[in-house]
Length: 140
Image (cartoon, rainbow, N blue to C red):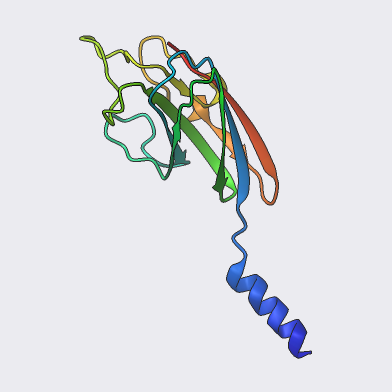
């Protein structure tokens, strides 16, 4: 009885209920810099200029044409935005009209035309106790 109680207590205290999300990022054309990944929860201010992601990760580019990384996320709906910071200045460089000069991408491979995406354009689901793969092609 005591060992059952300890097992249940341990499961409650130490279970994280997180899911592994594997990101497969392709179309990397520059051999230097860092991929800066931001994941936004549903209901966040995804798409606004100065929003901060709920989860983030930095992936050094090692001269490959594609990178693979794994993140742990609780179940829920999310949207993802990333950019390749080719000069490692910690910002997405833009041209005079505000279009990115550095490669970028979104979940669902959303391609912006005149404005940035809304949450629903990039939304994806992370299910409980499983693993997911998200493929993102950088736009250059």
